[in-house]
Image (tube, rainbow, N blue to C red):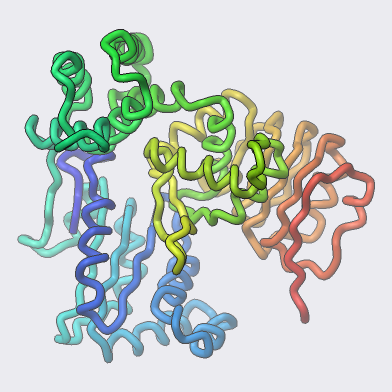
Length: 414
């Protein structure tokens, strides 16, 4: 069990540490799975994600589980795991009930199996046996400094900070209070800025101003906000767009590139294709630590990404303030911003009255067939539809009267 030293405090590196253990140790187990739980979890979704991880190399078995109900799926997983040495990582667990819902299938089979949880919540951490809880603390000054220099001066010999920048750098690192996420974020920002005292003093002064005048945010969120402020204009919309997807959602390079192109976010650059430019944007966002690279393909090309939950919380707030877009899930609590220009639907819900909509993305295959036609009729600005989450046989007639720049539809054969 990995947990924070103080409740609800993020950015200490729990997920990064768990990921490092997972990469190094998983081959010692017969089967393994990494699953993110998040605040708004669905037991069925978690079970199916575990199933996908465990059977990703066995298409036949995976296909046979698609039509199973929750009880059958849980029993199948339990029987599979009890015969094997397994490693399961449950990342970002917020609610003890989430673990209780899953623990029935994690049998003690005396084969050396392991289940690891990461959490910010003390009440979740108490689920672990005494002696099996690792509480992460803020980094000591020397470790914080080493991490900062590694990020801010990656190309310099031994990541050495220039003498003239050291006093300012030490002051900036001190504001991070030993939190790895804050240190990595500010270091990644300074890495792409001019290595001059004037530039670094300007950033340090602005960070101090934000901390004094933006007291609603804690120090780590002020640092993350500063990283957003200094994003180039062409990256800001791309970054905010990623926050419209669910917490801990795996973002795919091709999907993001096509959506960004459809939205008009991608600028032409010389002889490069728009998809190549979009991939360049993704690299910039990962280099700045605004997105986390999760997986590369067999050729070493970036494939899947994830947004840190603290960065996503910041981006969601910015989306609401700027009417950039809204996401409908269990966190909405029944309220929805009606003037949002983009809408991502995670769940079955009838919605109307959003007359400014330009983009709809569906992620739930249980959406009623009337939802999209109704939204299309109400908005004359609709330009992008991503309907791959809908099990529809034909494109809704209501789409015919719109000037759509891009549409993706997943047609399910019955």
